[in-house]
Image 1 (tube, rainbow, N blue to C red):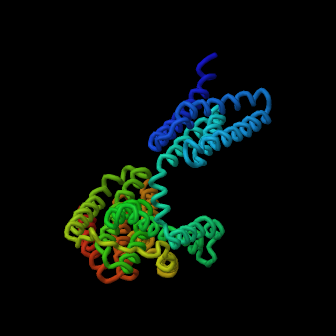
Image 2: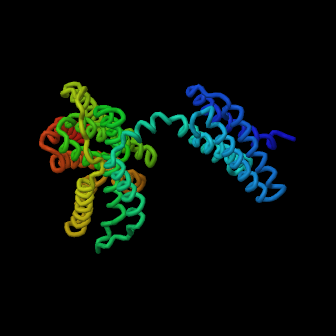
Image 3: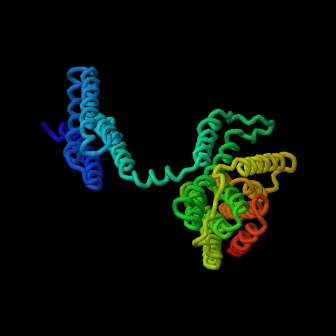
Length: 415
C-alpha cells in the first residue's frame, strides 16, 4: 500500500470532518445531543468512499444499493430523533446523504477536486442558515417575482436570441444588445439587494465598484433610474456612478498591460490623473452629502425593464450611427474612430489600438486614441445621467465628470 491508494480516503475523511464540524456546532447551538455530529459525518464520508471503491470490484449495482440502503437508514435514524430534537431535522438528513455521495466522488481521481469544492459549498450553505433565512423571510412577493423575471431575461430570452445581425451593415447583434439590457437590469437588481443588506450608502458604493468592473456605462444607466425614483439617494447614486467610472480606467490599463505592455507606461499618466481627480471629488461629494442615516429609503421595483430597454436602444443607435459615419463620411483618422467607438464601448477600442500598436499604428497615436475614447465614454455617461436621471443627479455627476474630462484632455495634449 502506498500514499496514492490511501489519499482518496484521507480526502473523504476531511470532507466528512468539514461538514461534520458545522453540524456539531449547530447541535451545540441548539443544545442537542445524540444526533449525528463530527465523528458520524466523518465516518459517513469514509463509508461512501469505501462503497465506491468496492463498486469497482462488484459493479455499479453495489454502489446504487449502498446509497439506497444508507438513505433508508438515515431516514429511520433522523425520524427516531424527533424526541431529542423536538422536530424532524430534514436538513441534517439531506446533509448526511450528500456527505455519503461526496465520499463516493472522492474515491475517483478525476472527481476529487469536484468533491472538495462541493463540500466547501455545502458547508457554506449550512453555515449561513441565519443569514439566508433572514433575507428570504424579508422578501416580498414583488422581490420574488422580479427575481424570476430577471432569470427569464438572462437564462431564457438571451440564449434564444440570434447572434447574426439582421441589418445590412452587420452591427446590430440582437444577443449583444440584449446582453447590455440584462446587464443594466442585473446591476439595478444587485444594487437593490445590497441596499437591503448593507444599507443605502454602503450598498450603492459597493454596487459602483462592482458595476465599474463590468460596465460603468450600464451602471450609470441603472443609477440614473434609481436617482430619478428616489431623490433621497441622489448623492449616493452619483457617488456610485463616479466610482464606477473611476474603476473603468484601471480596467483599461489592465487590458493594455495584458495585450501590449509597451503602451502601459505612456497611457498611465492621463488615466491615473483622471482616476485621482474622480476619486478625490467623489470623496468630497460623500463627506458633504446630506446624511440619510435613520431614514428609511424605499427602493421600489428592483426589476425595471423600461430603463434597461432605453439603454439597449441607445446602445443600438450609437452602434448604427458609428457604422454609418464610417461608411458615408470616410475614416477621418484614428482619433475620430476612437471618439465614435468611445460613444458605445471603451474595451473594444482599447483592444484594437493595443493590438494595432504592435504593427501598423504609432504607439503615441494609440495611447491618445485610447485616452480620447475613455474621455468620450465619460461624457456619454454624463449625458445618460441627465437623460435617464434627474437634473439634480446630472448636476452632481457633472461636478465630478467635468473636472475629470478637463484633466484628462490636458494630460493628453500636454504629456
